[in-house]
Amino acid sequence: MLLVYTQKITPRINFIFKHIFVRILQIRVKFSTKVDEFVAHNGPKITYAKSPLASEFFIRSHDLLFEQGINDVDINISNWDETPCFFPAGEASSVPYDLFAASFYLISRYEEYLPHVQDQHERFPANESLAFKNGFLEKPVIDIWARKFLEKLKEKFPNYEIKSREFDLISTIDVDMAFAYKHKGVVRSIGGYINDLVHLRFVNLWHHLLSNLNLRKDPYNTFSEILNIKKNYKINTLFFFLISDFSTYDKNISSNSTKFISLIKSVADYAKVGLKPSYFAVKNEEKLKKEKHRLEGIINTPVTFSRQHYIRLIIPETYQNLIDLDIEEDYSMGYAKHVGFRASTCSPYYFYDLDFEIQTPLKLFPFAIMDMALKDGMKLSNTESLQKIIEIKNEIKKVNGTFISVFHNDTLSENDKWKGWSEIYKKMLIE
Image (tube, rainbow, N blue to C red):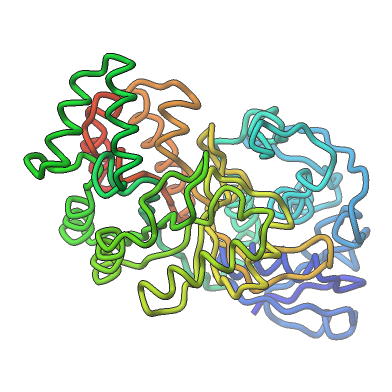
Protein backbone atom coordinates (compact mmCIF):
# COMPACT_ATOMS: atom_id res chain seq x y z
CA MET A 1 0.00 0.00 0.00
CA LEU A 2 1.38 3.39 -1.01
CA LEU A 3 0.26 6.37 1.08
CA VAL A 4 -0.19 9.78 -0.55
CA TYR A 5 -0.26 12.87 1.61
CA THR A 6 -2.05 15.88 0.17
CA GLN A 7 -3.66 18.89 1.80
CA LYS A 8 -6.98 18.23 0.06
CA ILE A 9 -8.32 15.05 -1.57
CA THR A 10 -10.23 16.20 -4.64
CA PRO A 11 -12.16 14.04 -7.14
CA ARG A 12 -9.48 14.85 -9.73
CA ILE A 13 -6.68 13.66 -7.45
CA ASN A 14 -8.55 10.48 -6.59
CA PHE A 15 -9.21 9.77 -10.27
CA ILE A 16 -5.76 10.35 -11.78
CA PHE A 17 -3.72 8.86 -8.94
CA LYS A 18 -5.78 5.66 -9.15
CA HIS A 19 -5.38 5.53 -12.92
CA ILE A 20 -1.60 5.81 -12.71
CA PHE A 21 -1.01 3.73 -9.59
CA VAL A 22 -3.78 1.12 -9.71
CA ARG A 23 -4.48 0.65 -13.43
CA ILE A 24 -1.01 1.25 -14.87
CA LEU A 25 1.48 0.43 -12.11
CA GLN A 26 -0.63 -2.16 -10.23
CA ILE A 27 0.04 -0.41 -6.90
CA ARG A 28 -2.66 0.02 -4.25
CA VAL A 29 -2.91 3.60 -3.09
CA LYS A 30 -4.42 5.37 -0.08
CA PHE A 31 -4.80 9.11 0.59
CA SER A 32 -4.35 11.09 3.77
CA THR A 33 -4.61 14.73 4.79
CA LYS A 34 -3.21 14.06 8.28
CA VAL A 35 0.48 14.75 8.82
CA ASP A 36 0.76 12.46 11.86
CA GLU A 37 -0.74 9.52 9.93
CA PHE A 38 1.67 10.16 7.06
CA VAL A 39 4.73 10.36 9.37
CA ALA A 40 3.74 7.15 11.19
CA HIS A 41 3.32 5.16 7.96
CA ASN A 42 6.22 2.69 7.57
CA GLY A 43 5.58 1.70 3.95
CA PRO A 44 6.22 3.65 0.76
CA LYS A 45 4.74 7.15 0.79
CA ILE A 46 4.81 10.37 -1.19
CA THR A 47 3.78 13.95 -0.62
CA TYR A 48 1.76 15.77 -3.26
CA ALA A 49 1.67 19.41 -2.23
CA LYS A 50 3.32 22.80 -2.76
CA SER A 51 6.14 22.02 -0.34
CA PRO A 52 7.58 18.88 1.32
CA LEU A 53 7.05 18.00 4.97
CA ALA A 54 10.64 16.82 5.41
CA SER A 55 12.94 14.79 3.14
CA GLU A 56 10.27 12.37 1.87
CA PHE A 57 9.48 11.51 -1.75
CA PHE A 58 7.90 14.78 -2.86
CA ILE A 59 6.05 15.98 -5.95
CA ARG A 60 5.32 19.67 -6.19
CA SER A 61 1.68 19.97 -7.21
CA HIS A 62 0.25 22.07 -10.01
CA ASP A 63 -3.04 23.86 -9.29
CA LEU A 64 -5.01 21.89 -11.93
CA LEU A 65 -6.03 19.00 -9.66
CA PHE A 66 -7.34 21.38 -7.00
CA GLU A 67 -9.49 23.43 -9.39
CA GLN A 68 -13.03 22.93 -10.65
CA GLY A 69 -14.44 23.58 -14.09
CA ILE A 70 -12.52 24.67 -17.17
CA ASN A 71 -9.92 27.41 -16.91
CA ASP A 72 -7.14 28.78 -19.08
CA VAL A 73 -4.13 26.53 -18.58
CA ASP A 74 -0.65 27.70 -19.53
CA ILE A 75 1.25 24.80 -21.11
CA ASN A 76 4.87 24.81 -22.23
CA ILE A 77 6.28 21.52 -23.47
CA SER A 78 9.80 20.47 -22.54
CA ASN A 79 11.51 17.09 -22.15
CA TRP A 80 11.82 14.68 -19.25
CA ASP A 81 14.88 12.87 -20.54
CA GLU A 82 13.65 12.09 -24.08
CA THR A 83 9.92 12.19 -23.31
CA PRO A 84 7.82 15.37 -23.80
CA CYS A 85 6.24 16.62 -20.59
CA PHE A 86 4.75 19.77 -19.05
CA PHE A 87 3.90 21.40 -15.72
CA PRO A 88 7.49 21.63 -14.35
CA ALA A 89 7.71 20.96 -10.61
CA GLY A 90 11.02 22.62 -9.70
CA GLU A 91 14.27 21.34 -8.22
CA ALA A 92 12.84 20.37 -4.82
CA SER A 93 10.50 17.84 -6.45
CA SER A 94 11.63 14.20 -6.63
CA VAL A 95 10.48 14.15 -10.26
CA PRO A 96 10.88 17.21 -12.50
CA TYR A 97 7.23 17.45 -13.61
CA ASP A 98 3.80 17.13 -12.08
CA LEU A 99 2.96 14.09 -14.17
CA PHE A 100 -0.37 13.70 -12.33
CA ALA A 101 -1.72 17.10 -13.38
CA ALA A 102 -0.30 16.66 -16.90
CA SER A 103 -1.86 13.21 -17.16
CA PHE A 104 -5.22 14.52 -15.96
CA TYR A 105 -5.17 17.31 -18.54
CA LEU A 106 -4.61 14.80 -21.35
CA ILE A 107 -6.78 11.89 -20.24
CA SER A 108 -9.79 14.02 -19.27
CA ARG A 109 -9.61 15.57 -22.79
CA TYR A 110 -9.56 18.97 -21.10
CA GLU A 111 -8.65 20.64 -24.40
CA GLU A 112 -11.81 19.29 -26.06
CA TYR A 113 -13.92 21.30 -23.60
CA LEU A 114 -12.13 24.47 -24.72
CA PRO A 115 -13.10 26.35 -27.91
CA HIS A 116 -11.66 24.52 -30.91
CA VAL A 117 -12.00 24.07 -34.66
CA GLN A 118 -14.20 21.13 -35.72
CA ASP A 119 -13.99 19.14 -38.94
CA GLN A 120 -16.92 18.59 -41.33
CA HIS A 121 -18.35 15.88 -39.07
CA GLU A 122 -18.20 18.07 -35.94
CA ARG A 123 -15.24 16.09 -34.60
CA PHE A 124 -12.19 17.27 -32.71
CA PRO A 125 -9.39 16.77 -35.28
CA ALA A 126 -6.06 15.21 -34.39
CA ASN A 127 -4.13 18.22 -35.68
CA GLU A 128 -5.86 20.46 -33.12
CA SER A 129 -4.51 18.42 -30.22
CA LEU A 130 -1.62 19.31 -27.96
CA ALA A 131 -0.15 15.86 -28.64
CA PHE A 132 -0.12 16.31 -32.43
CA LYS A 133 1.24 19.86 -32.31
CA ASN A 134 4.09 18.78 -30.06
CA GLY A 135 4.95 15.50 -31.73
CA PHE A 136 3.85 12.96 -29.14
CA LEU A 137 0.51 11.76 -30.53
CA GLU A 138 2.02 8.37 -31.40
CA LYS A 139 3.40 7.78 -27.91
CA PRO A 140 1.36 6.75 -24.83
CA VAL A 141 3.10 9.40 -22.74
CA ILE A 142 0.98 8.89 -19.62
CA ASP A 143 2.08 5.24 -19.44
CA ILE A 144 5.67 6.26 -20.20
CA TRP A 145 5.61 8.90 -17.44
CA ALA A 146 4.19 6.32 -15.04
CA ARG A 147 7.08 3.93 -15.71
CA LYS A 148 9.65 6.72 -15.32
CA PHE A 149 8.00 7.68 -12.03
CA LEU A 150 8.14 4.04 -10.92
CA GLU A 151 11.90 3.96 -11.49
CA LYS A 152 12.30 6.93 -9.13
CA LEU A 153 9.97 5.29 -6.60
CA LYS A 154 12.04 2.09 -6.66
CA GLU A 155 15.18 4.09 -5.91
CA LYS A 156 13.51 5.53 -2.81
CA PHE A 157 11.86 2.27 -1.71
CA PRO A 158 14.05 -0.56 -3.12
CA ASN A 159 12.47 -3.27 -0.94
CA TYR A 160 8.89 -2.57 -1.98
CA GLU A 161 7.53 -5.36 -4.17
CA ILE A 162 5.69 -4.16 -7.25
CA LYS A 163 3.65 -6.30 -9.66
CA SER A 164 3.94 -5.92 -13.40
CA ARG A 165 0.96 -6.00 -15.73
CA GLU A 166 0.98 -7.86 -19.06
CA PHE A 167 0.63 -6.60 -22.62
CA ASP A 168 -2.89 -7.12 -23.97
CA LEU A 169 -4.32 -7.03 -27.49
CA ILE A 170 -7.93 -6.44 -28.55
CA SER A 171 -9.01 -6.65 -32.18
CA THR A 172 -12.20 -4.73 -32.94
CA ILE A 173 -14.19 -5.06 -36.15
CA ASP A 174 -16.61 -2.38 -37.34
CA VAL A 175 -19.46 -3.59 -39.54
CA ASP A 176 -20.63 -0.47 -41.35
CA MET A 177 -21.67 -2.48 -44.44
CA ALA A 178 -22.12 -6.18 -43.89
CA PHE A 179 -22.40 -6.92 -47.63
CA ALA A 180 -21.15 -5.12 -50.71
CA TYR A 181 -23.97 -6.28 -53.02
CA LYS A 182 -26.31 -8.77 -51.41
CA HIS A 183 -29.47 -8.39 -49.30
CA LYS A 184 -29.92 -4.66 -50.00
CA GLY A 185 -33.43 -4.83 -51.39
CA VAL A 186 -34.68 -4.29 -54.92
CA VAL A 187 -34.44 -0.49 -55.03
CA ARG A 188 -30.87 -0.28 -53.70
CA SER A 189 -29.74 -3.19 -55.91
CA ILE A 190 -31.14 -1.63 -59.08
CA GLY A 191 -29.61 1.70 -58.08
CA GLY A 192 -26.26 -0.05 -57.66
CA TYR A 193 -26.45 -1.59 -61.14
CA ILE A 194 -27.32 1.77 -62.70
CA ASN A 195 -24.52 3.51 -60.81
CA ASP A 196 -21.97 0.96 -62.06
CA LEU A 197 -23.21 1.39 -65.66
CA VAL A 198 -23.15 5.19 -65.53
CA HIS A 199 -19.58 5.20 -64.19
CA LEU A 200 -18.49 2.41 -66.60
CA ARG A 201 -17.51 0.10 -63.72
CA PHE A 202 -18.11 -3.08 -65.70
CA VAL A 203 -15.95 -5.35 -63.51
CA ASN A 204 -17.84 -4.15 -60.46
CA LEU A 205 -21.13 -4.68 -62.27
CA TRP A 206 -20.08 -8.25 -63.12
CA HIS A 207 -19.14 -9.01 -59.52
CA HIS A 208 -22.38 -7.41 -58.36
CA LEU A 209 -24.41 -9.65 -60.64
CA LEU A 210 -22.52 -12.85 -59.71
CA SER A 211 -22.94 -12.13 -55.98
CA ASN A 212 -26.68 -11.57 -56.31
CA LEU A 213 -27.00 -14.80 -58.32
CA ASN A 214 -25.11 -16.67 -55.56
CA LEU A 215 -22.36 -17.56 -58.05
CA ARG A 216 -19.75 -15.62 -56.11
CA LYS A 217 -19.31 -14.91 -52.41
CA ASP A 218 -20.07 -11.32 -51.44
CA PRO A 219 -16.62 -9.70 -50.95
CA TYR A 220 -17.56 -7.98 -47.68
CA ASN A 221 -18.67 -11.26 -46.13
CA THR A 222 -15.36 -11.90 -44.39
CA PHE A 223 -16.84 -12.88 -41.03
CA SER A 224 -15.88 -16.55 -41.15
CA GLU A 225 -12.26 -15.59 -41.94
CA ILE A 226 -12.14 -13.13 -39.03
CA LEU A 227 -13.66 -15.68 -36.65
CA ASN A 228 -11.19 -18.34 -37.81
CA ILE A 229 -8.30 -15.96 -37.12
CA LYS A 230 -9.81 -15.24 -33.71
CA LYS A 231 -9.98 -18.94 -32.95
CA ASN A 232 -6.61 -19.97 -34.39
CA TYR A 233 -4.60 -17.16 -32.79
CA LYS A 234 -6.75 -16.87 -29.64
CA ILE A 235 -7.44 -13.18 -30.28
CA ASN A 236 -9.89 -11.21 -28.17
CA THR A 237 -12.17 -9.93 -30.97
CA LEU A 238 -15.15 -7.58 -30.65
CA PHE A 239 -17.67 -6.74 -33.39
CA PHE A 240 -19.57 -3.46 -33.64
CA PHE A 241 -22.70 -3.56 -35.81
CA LEU A 242 -24.27 -0.48 -37.36
CA ILE A 243 -27.97 -1.27 -37.13
CA SER A 244 -29.59 2.06 -37.89
CA ASP A 245 -32.16 3.27 -40.38
CA PHE A 246 -30.73 4.11 -43.81
CA SER A 247 -29.26 7.61 -44.24
CA THR A 248 -26.55 9.44 -46.17
CA TYR A 249 -23.95 8.26 -43.67
CA ASP A 250 -25.56 5.00 -42.52
CA LYS A 251 -25.72 2.50 -45.37
CA ASN A 252 -25.77 -0.91 -43.76
CA ILE A 253 -28.32 -3.60 -44.60
CA SER A 254 -31.84 -3.08 -43.27
CA SER A 255 -32.20 -4.25 -39.69
CA ASN A 256 -35.35 -6.09 -40.82
CA SER A 257 -33.37 -8.26 -43.24
CA THR A 258 -33.50 -11.88 -42.12
CA LYS A 259 -30.03 -12.46 -43.62
CA PHE A 260 -28.57 -9.55 -41.66
CA ILE A 261 -30.25 -10.69 -38.45
CA SER A 262 -28.96 -14.22 -39.04
CA LEU A 263 -25.44 -12.88 -39.60
CA ILE A 264 -25.45 -10.91 -36.34
CA LYS A 265 -26.76 -13.92 -34.41
CA SER A 266 -24.11 -16.22 -35.90
CA VAL A 267 -21.28 -13.78 -35.07
CA ALA A 268 -22.64 -13.36 -31.53
CA ASP A 269 -22.34 -17.13 -31.05
CA TYR A 270 -18.54 -16.87 -31.27
CA ALA A 271 -17.62 -13.30 -30.31
CA LYS A 272 -18.88 -10.36 -28.31
CA VAL A 273 -21.14 -7.96 -30.20
CA GLY A 274 -21.51 -4.25 -29.49
CA LEU A 275 -23.38 -1.29 -30.92
CA LYS A 276 -22.20 1.15 -33.58
CA PRO A 277 -24.57 4.09 -32.97
CA SER A 278 -25.57 5.80 -36.21
CA TYR A 279 -24.21 9.10 -37.47
CA PHE A 280 -27.12 11.16 -36.17
CA ALA A 281 -27.58 9.24 -32.91
CA VAL A 282 -24.68 11.22 -31.44
CA LYS A 283 -27.11 14.10 -30.90
CA ASN A 284 -30.33 12.13 -30.56
CA GLU A 285 -30.69 10.08 -27.41
CA GLU A 286 -34.02 8.59 -28.52
CA LYS A 287 -32.44 7.30 -31.75
CA LEU A 288 -29.54 5.87 -29.75
CA LYS A 289 -31.96 4.13 -27.38
CA LYS A 290 -33.94 2.70 -30.31
CA GLU A 291 -30.81 1.27 -31.96
CA LYS A 292 -29.57 -0.23 -28.70
CA HIS A 293 -32.91 -1.96 -28.09
CA ARG A 294 -32.96 -3.14 -31.70
CA LEU A 295 -29.60 -4.89 -31.34
CA GLU A 296 -30.56 -6.34 -27.95
CA GLY A 297 -33.67 -7.81 -29.56
CA ILE A 298 -31.52 -9.61 -32.10
CA ILE A 299 -28.80 -11.02 -29.83
CA ASN A 300 -31.15 -11.53 -26.85
CA THR A 301 -28.67 -10.10 -24.37
CA PRO A 302 -27.96 -6.61 -23.00
CA VAL A 303 -25.71 -4.42 -25.17
CA THR A 304 -23.01 -3.05 -22.88
CA PHE A 305 -20.35 -1.59 -25.22
CA SER A 306 -20.24 0.71 -28.22
CA ARG A 307 -18.18 2.70 -30.72
CA GLN A 308 -19.37 5.86 -32.43
CA HIS A 309 -19.90 5.75 -36.19
CA TYR A 310 -17.38 7.99 -38.00
CA ILE A 311 -15.72 8.29 -34.55
CA ARG A 312 -18.23 11.10 -34.09
CA LEU A 313 -17.35 11.72 -30.48
CA ILE A 314 -18.52 14.93 -28.84
CA ILE A 315 -17.24 15.24 -25.28
CA PRO A 316 -18.93 15.13 -22.81
CA GLU A 317 -22.39 14.83 -24.41
CA THR A 318 -21.73 11.53 -26.22
CA TYR A 319 -20.53 9.84 -23.06
CA GLN A 320 -23.31 11.29 -20.93
CA ASN A 321 -25.88 9.80 -23.33
CA LEU A 322 -24.19 6.40 -23.22
CA ILE A 323 -24.16 6.42 -19.44
CA ASP A 324 -27.88 7.24 -19.36
CA LEU A 325 -28.52 4.09 -21.43
CA ASP A 326 -26.37 1.84 -19.20
CA ILE A 327 -23.56 1.38 -21.71
CA GLU A 328 -20.60 0.21 -19.64
CA GLU A 329 -17.73 0.42 -22.14
CA ASP A 330 -16.93 2.62 -25.13
CA TYR A 331 -14.25 2.15 -27.79
CA SER A 332 -14.42 5.54 -29.54
CA MET A 333 -11.39 7.23 -27.96
CA GLY A 334 -9.16 7.71 -30.98
CA TYR A 335 -8.95 9.67 -34.21
CA ALA A 336 -10.56 8.87 -37.55
CA LYS A 337 -7.75 10.33 -39.67
CA HIS A 338 -4.61 9.68 -37.65
CA VAL A 339 -3.20 6.82 -35.62
CA GLY A 340 -1.96 7.34 -32.10
CA PHE A 341 -3.28 8.04 -28.62
CA ARG A 342 -6.05 10.63 -28.37
CA ALA A 343 -6.04 10.45 -24.57
CA SER A 344 -2.25 9.85 -24.44
CA THR A 345 -2.69 6.49 -22.72
CA CYS A 346 -2.87 2.86 -23.84
CA SER A 347 -4.62 1.78 -20.65
CA PRO A 348 -8.41 1.51 -20.31
CA TYR A 349 -9.78 4.09 -17.88
CA TYR A 350 -13.04 5.52 -16.57
CA PHE A 351 -14.42 8.68 -18.12
CA TYR A 352 -14.03 11.72 -15.89
CA ASP A 353 -16.82 14.22 -16.52
CA LEU A 354 -15.49 17.76 -16.11
CA ASP A 355 -19.03 19.14 -16.23
CA PHE A 356 -19.91 17.39 -12.97
CA GLU A 357 -16.40 16.78 -11.60
CA ILE A 358 -16.96 13.06 -11.11
CA GLN A 359 -15.49 9.78 -12.27
CA THR A 360 -18.28 8.02 -14.15
CA PRO A 361 -18.95 4.25 -14.45
CA LEU A 362 -18.26 4.37 -18.21
CA LYS A 363 -14.98 2.64 -19.02
CA LEU A 364 -13.12 3.89 -22.08
CA PHE A 365 -10.91 1.65 -24.21
CA PRO A 366 -8.66 3.89 -26.34
CA PHE A 367 -7.75 2.48 -29.76
CA ALA A 368 -4.36 3.13 -31.30
CA ILE A 369 -4.76 2.35 -34.99
CA MET A 370 -7.56 2.31 -37.55
CA ASP A 371 -7.40 0.93 -41.08
CA MET A 372 -9.14 3.98 -42.60
CA ALA A 373 -6.80 6.38 -40.80
CA LEU A 374 -3.76 4.64 -42.27
CA LYS A 375 -5.17 4.26 -45.77
CA ASP A 376 -7.26 7.40 -46.31
CA GLY A 377 -6.27 9.80 -43.54
CA MET A 378 -2.49 9.40 -43.66
CA LYS A 379 -2.29 8.11 -47.27
CA LEU A 380 0.17 5.34 -46.36
CA SER A 381 1.07 2.44 -48.63
CA ASN A 382 0.58 -1.15 -47.48
CA THR A 383 4.23 -1.42 -46.44
CA GLU A 384 4.13 1.91 -44.63
CA SER A 385 0.85 1.01 -42.92
CA LEU A 386 2.21 -2.26 -41.53
CA GLN A 387 5.38 -0.51 -40.42
CA LYS A 388 3.37 2.16 -38.61
CA ILE A 389 1.17 -0.49 -36.95
CA ILE A 390 4.19 -2.40 -35.67
CA GLU A 391 5.85 0.83 -34.45
CA ILE A 392 2.82 1.74 -32.36
CA LYS A 393 2.31 -1.82 -31.15
CA ASN A 394 5.94 -1.84 -29.97
CA GLU A 395 5.41 1.45 -28.11
CA ILE A 396 2.55 -0.21 -26.24
CA LYS A 397 4.55 -3.36 -25.56
CA LYS A 398 7.27 -1.25 -23.90
CA VAL A 399 4.79 -0.19 -21.24
CA ASN A 400 2.78 -3.44 -21.14
CA GLY A 401 -0.33 -1.59 -22.24
CA THR A 402 -3.41 -2.59 -24.23
CA PHE A 403 -3.15 -2.47 -28.03
CA ILE A 404 -6.58 -1.94 -29.58
CA SER A 405 -7.00 -1.96 -33.36
CA VAL A 406 -9.96 -0.96 -35.52
CA PHE A 407 -10.53 -2.83 -38.78
CA HIS A 408 -13.68 -3.16 -40.89
CA ASN A 409 -15.06 -6.38 -42.33
CA ASP A 410 -14.60 -4.99 -45.88
CA THR A 411 -10.90 -4.29 -45.18
CA LEU A 412 -10.31 -8.03 -45.50
CA SER A 413 -12.28 -8.24 -48.77
CA GLU A 414 -9.10 -8.13 -50.92
CA ASN A 415 -10.88 -5.83 -53.38
CA ASP A 416 -8.87 -3.24 -55.31
CA LYS A 417 -8.70 -0.72 -52.46
CA TRP A 418 -7.83 -3.24 -49.75
CA LYS A 419 -5.57 -5.61 -51.69
CA GLY A 420 -3.07 -7.13 -49.27
CA TRP A 421 -4.80 -6.01 -46.10
CA SER A 422 -5.80 -9.51 -44.98
CA GLU A 423 -2.10 -10.21 -44.57
CA ILE A 424 -1.57 -6.89 -42.78
CA TYR A 425 -4.35 -7.82 -40.35
CA LYS A 426 -2.77 -11.19 -39.57
CA LYS A 427 0.73 -9.76 -39.18
CA MET A 428 -0.60 -7.04 -36.87
CA LEU A 429 -1.97 -9.72 -34.55
CA ILE A 430 1.04 -12.03 -34.42
CA GLU A 431 4.15 -9.84 -34.89
